[in-house]
Length: 295
Image (cartoon, rainbow, N blue to C red; front, side, top):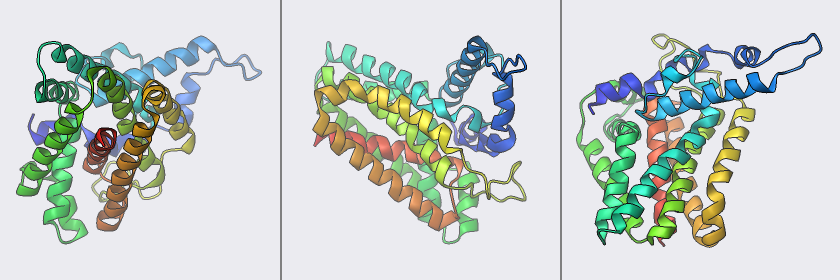
C-alpha cells in the first residue's frame, strides 16, 4: 500500500476528529421521556455504531457501511473502541500464528502472524512509523518535519524503521509458545491501540491550524473516553495476566516506556502529535511489549 493511499484512509483523517461534538453523539443515543430516560436499545445501537467505525478506521474490513452513523463523524466519537478493535486484530494474528505453528517451526509462524496483522490493518501503523522516522530523522525544524510527514516518498530512515520494526516483532514473537502467543497478541494489539488514545487525551494536534480542517491547539480527547478504552484493554489482558503475569508486566513497561518517549519527543519536535505519530506510537508499543514478553 502506498503512503498516499495510507494517508487517504489513515491517520491524517484525525483532522476531522474534533468536528463532531460528543454532546451531539450523546443526543443520538438518548430517547427522552421528559425525565431524562435513556433507552438501553438506543445506547447499544450507538455503541455498536461507534465500534464499527473504530474497526473500519483501523482495518480494511468493510464494516463502515453497516453503521447507521455517517462514516466521517470524527475520531473522538469512536476512539474509545480502538482497543476493542485491537482485540479482533490480535485474535486474527494469534490464530494465524497458532495454525501456522501446527505446520512449521521457527520464525515462519511469527512472520505469518505479523503479515496477517499488516494485511488486516492495511499497514496503517507501519506507514505512520515510516513517515515519523523520516520526519524526525531528516527534519531540523518543526516545519520541515511536518512537511516530510506529508511527503508520500519513503526515505532512508523510514526504510530502516520498517525493517527493524518488523524484524524485532517477528523475532520476539517467535520465542513464545503458540498457546501463549495467541493470548499475548490479543493483549498486545489491544494495548497498542490504547496507547494513541492516551496521546489524544493528553496532547494536542501539531498540524498547521491554517491548513487543517479543524484546529487542535486546545482540543483533547475527554478522559472519560480514555477510561472506557482502558476497560477494553484490561479485558484483553486478563488471559495472559493469569498465565504469565510477570512477563506481561515487563512487556507493558517496555511498551509504555517506548510510547511515552516517542510522545514526549514528538511534543518537543513538532509541538504535539500528528496522525503519523499516532501510528508510530502503536508500532513502538507492540515492539516494546513483545520484547518484554520475550525476555
